[in-house]
Structures are given as C-alpha cells and as structure tokens.
Image (cartoon, rainbow, N blue to C red; front, top):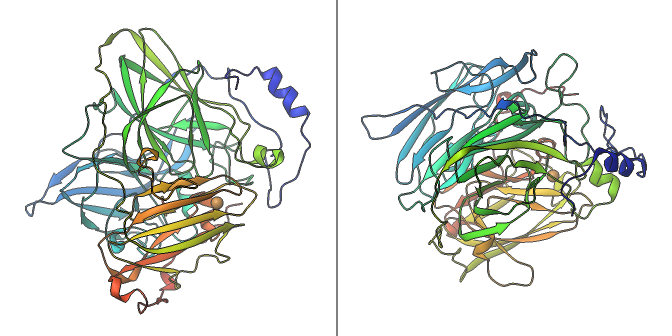
Length: 513
Ligand code: C2O
Ligand code: CU
C-alpha cells in the first residue's frame, strides 16, 4: 500500500466512483467522495495535554475527584469561537473535553459528579470494572443541577480508560459537544515504559468534527457509521504538533470519535510497537506499521525517534469488506493527517522495550458457563432495539462465557461490553489468544464473526443492568444496544427479565438534524 497519495491520484480515484445516494443520509458531504487532508495542514498548533484532575484523599481513605459538566466555548479554528460542553475539576473553566483522572489498583475512589448543564446527562466509566449502579449508563441519569456520587474500588490491571456521557439516545449529541475525558489506571507492577504524563507518555484523543458556517459543531450528513467530520481534533487541538524531547515516546491513542474508524500509520511508514490494547498491556510488544481503531477502542504505542525527525501520524484507507460506495460513505478511503511529532535536535536516551509487559494470564477458560450468540444487523442486536425495561441477558457473577458476535450486516459495527475485559478466540481456535490483547470493544468488518471469552464481574445486582452495544454512537442511540445483569450463578434462570423504568427521568430528545 502506498503511504503518500497525491491529491491528483485521489481526485482521479474519485472520478471513477459512481455517485451513490445512501439511505438515511441528509448529507453536506457527498458520501461517495473520499476526503484528504494530506499536505493541507502545517501542524502550527501545539498539542493540548488535558490536565490531570485534582483529587484529595478523604478521612475514610477514599480518593475523591470532582467533575462538573458545564457549557463553555473554545477556539479550534483560528478566530472562530465554537460553543462546547466540557468537564472541569473546578480548577479552571471547562471548554472542551475534561481532565484526566488517575488512580491506582487497590484504591477506592469517589467522583462527585455535578451536572451544570440544562439537560440530563450521565457519566459512564468506559472499561471500568465496577458495580452496575456506579457504571453511569442510561440507568444512572443526573438531572440538570443534580449531583451523583459513585464510589468503587479499583480492581483491575493498569489501562487507559475513558469517561463519557451515556444518556438514553443522546450519547452522540453530548460527546460531539465535547463531553469526554480519560481515566488512567496504574498498577504497582507497571512495566518499564515511558511514563511522564504529557512528556513521553502522551494522551492522544482522536475526534473528527464538521463545523457549520457559524463555527458550530454539525451533526448533519450521517451515513453508514454516523457523522464523519473533515477536521480532526487531537485532544481538542486542530492542526496539532507534539514537541518530542526523548528518543522514545508512548502515545495512548483513544478513539473518541462518534463514528470514524482510523487506520493509523506514519507518513514515512515507520514501524511502531503496540504495547497495550483497550484494557491493559499485551504479553509482549507487537511491532507493526498499521493499527485499526474503531470508536471507543484504545491502543498504546511506543514510537522511536531520531533527533530532528518530524513524522506524521495519519489515517490511511481501510478495507472492512464492504462495497466501494459504502466504504467511501464510512470514510474508508479518506486520508487524514492527525498529528506531527516534532523531535528536538537532541533527545534524551531511552531504554529498550521490556521483553514481557504483562504477566497476568489469559481468561480462565476451562469452565465455560454459557455460550451465547449475538447477531448484529441493521441497527439491531438479535433483531431487537434497546428497551430500558427489558433485560436481554442474565449471567452468573464471576463466571466465564463464550460470546459469539456475528455481524451479518453489509456494514461494519463494533461491540462493547460494559464492566468487563475480554479476550478474543481466533477463528478455528478453542482458546483465547492473549497476544490479541485485553479488550472491551471490538471492531467487526462487514459479515465478520468474532468470539469473545469473557469473565464477568463479581458484583451482583438483579435490578441494575450493564449495557452491551455497538459503540458507533449514532447506532447505539437509535437502539443498537442491549442490557445484561450479573447475578448469583444459581439464580441465572430465575432473575428478573423486566425492570421498572422511570420514564420521566430520561434524557431530553434533541432534534439533531
Ligand atoms: Cu463507552 Cu456503553 O459505552
Ligand atoms: Cu454499529
């Protein structure tokens, strides 16, 4: 695959494509036209690094964070003020996104979440293993002006997690406005990798946006996977560069886009090492030149630099087994420059990557308590749309199951399960392959099937469900989501399948047109 494409060849490629109208698309963007930002950015803006959230340890030993969701504004495009929402820990005015929360395995944390917006929101801790009532899904709404104070113990390996709103039917809208942040978990046994926050261990929050003529975020032009923007923001910075002062830099890449799938590569096609996936470190680093990340997926990579180099991180076309017009509509032929790394003329030396990154073993797979199949098609899971009062699946606490997820659609989707990390059982294999990483979200190409080995959490609650869903936020909002509860393994058959739902306390319904 060529790594540099001239505009000319892109235009030539476009001309050959049929103009196909996609159902449900009220587009600003002709979905048949791939876009390219290659050679159009000068990376003039220094990459913003989200601040680390303030916290204090209360008398009871609990680490306490404060997080308020507020409206604000930010200047992404020079001279243009864009209305935004963001989270603040109180130490600054929120503009966009939120501070990075950080806690260590074994700690107990409490987050005092305050909703200073004029509508319902929730805060979901994506990837966190915690009781369902603290999960921040659609069943934990926070009304305008209200507070919510979840508290839980950190009981999982080091990982790059994130938080975002999850109100019923309104996730795409609220994330697009700017609500999202990172939640780092450390573990006493962290491997010897670059670890200075914002210096050689750098968060990379990838988002794409469309701005309307007044500089507001636009949700127009949904197609295949959702809204695809033609402007990339990294940590809320448009046209960014990262100054690099060390020979090795660790990038914690988080896809916080509502719909866009990135196929990451460097413009000079250099190799980089993947050291972690969504939910933790790989057993050992994997060298590669390409990395696919769908919405909500994460990867940590380590890149080697020489003095003075300026490699560009870019997204290049991908192939997810679709017809060309659909691929174009889902951004699969876009070329997007994301971030320039700017190495200084002298760089601090770095050590070699450790041989072993993670020692914890695979999912205990000797006793599989249940095998289930989930079919993704259209905007439904197993032929149904999300219903807050329906519990779709009941699983036993601390048991292991094999979930076969079949995408029978001619479009890609992904699949996220709350409250767990899973491992992937490769096609034809009988056990999970640890080298594929700990995941909580997995991408499925059109017509692809994946098998997930999942050990469920110990937290039992027959009346508060966790979610599983496609994490393309438009898809999840229109109902491509379902619910499971975790109960005593002896009560899986007798646990409730329906819930009382307080319909007055559900999210506002926006016309997002
Ligand atoms: Cu990122 Cu249901 O969540
Ligand atoms: Cu989907």
